[in-house]
Image (tube, rainbow, N blue to C red; front, side):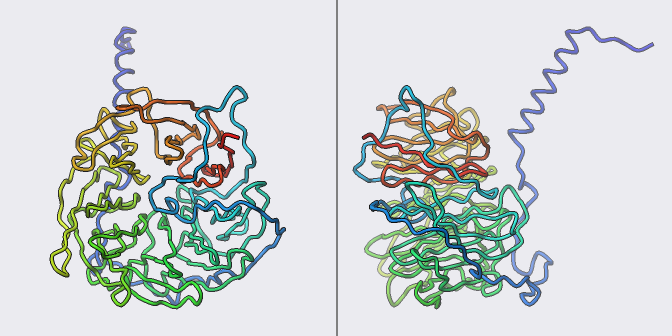
Length: 476
């Protein structure tokens, strides 16, 4: 005869199972079984580039129309003009949506991914993946109307892996440069979309594409696009006008491409590029005559997955962070004569201090801000503020009722704009000390709204996994 448990026991068993499932979800690490792949130690034969699929970068083009614009605002690369994710235009932006709520000016359907746009003089550029044509596609739109101007594309077979495209183009007066999911670099004319050159990083540099495809975003420095192949050359500089490699960085330790992007830094009068590779963090000279030379490197913080980019400070500090339990480290760059060195000031797990899984922290007026990852104990998913001199102590947090996800955040007109995973946009401001929500609303009825913002001329661009939308957030 079967034994019938009392209802209260069944209730407690169900509660226990639910709590166990929640703990498993919070602690689950999808890369826990990953190990660092070192050349010669992973029993994997070298890539035979002769057997790679032939990709004709930039071979196809569609022209739609050629509108004019009087707009002059610019968001030219990842994290904006000054690489700090702060919009500095003298335009007053909204505090609340008002009684009529938000209004989407235009919306474009995209292939699944997290690639974000750039803006230049009234034009929007975004690297999309066309799932029907199986093609990387650089698409150009009007910022004011959302009408497509032209599209430059090429066929490449990319399988869905939490999206496909996830990089941001770089644009200047003459050129647009992109990196596709499988490491195909393309340079085109900014206005006409005419193809100029292409580079296959896997074929030409032996790049090992990261687990979730290429996440690195290029930038253009005085006509030279800066890239980090992480194969035979750790970093390279390529002339936009010709596609010619003008400098390169040796890679004696076999460091690999991460999802992180290269950040410029000037310290003690020396201009350099800082990169968080799989293997360690380095500073590479950007000075004429010595470009590409390694100035310093540190491998004390080298997780197997790195998505946020380094945060650089004028006093020589470099903050690096990563998800999946890796935590963060604050490096301290020093110069003695002509020699540089990099030591670790702080290193900690996400439960012990400021860390980020996907987005790069923002710095304003000497304070650093970030949304904590889900493994940050009681403060998980909260927006927090710290003094960079001690990242293990928070000056304030957004609190238990205001939690966020993996979406982007930026500063504009003295306010924070934060996008949650489901497309909910929060407008907030610092209230000394503290965090005050001014308004929030769900903009996009989608999911995985992780692509970074772009903002220029009062037009805010955001996306979820399949939609790009434009909002007018200026006060008239």
